[in-house]
Image 1 (tube, rainbow, N blue to C red):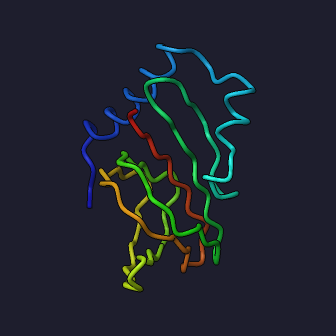
Image 2 (tube, rainbow, N blue to C red):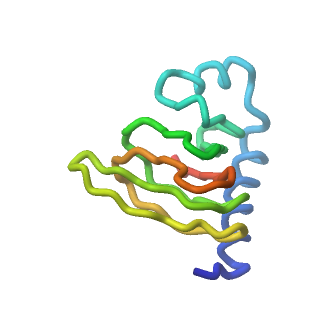
Length: 127
């Protein structure tokens, strides 16, 4: 799926809104955001009262826990093949292409990198 320049601009605009409205994340905010709700493959890039921007890096074979994922725009910084596993056992394979973006609704699943390359996703959640 090709993503228009508008979609990429929207992701960047949301991130910029967060940066300009509340400044950089303080060290104590980062510590709070690194709570057990986030897997070790995910780090908080920015968090304030308007947005939370996460970078998720999946090396081949990495698996994130089965958890609720909030609505967000996901930008693919480095593409590859991921597999989602839902609580009912259903699985879907997703080929992510570098430079694309998509909207993701709230859902619950785990993610596994079943490909041979590292996948990097940037997710922007509006609060």
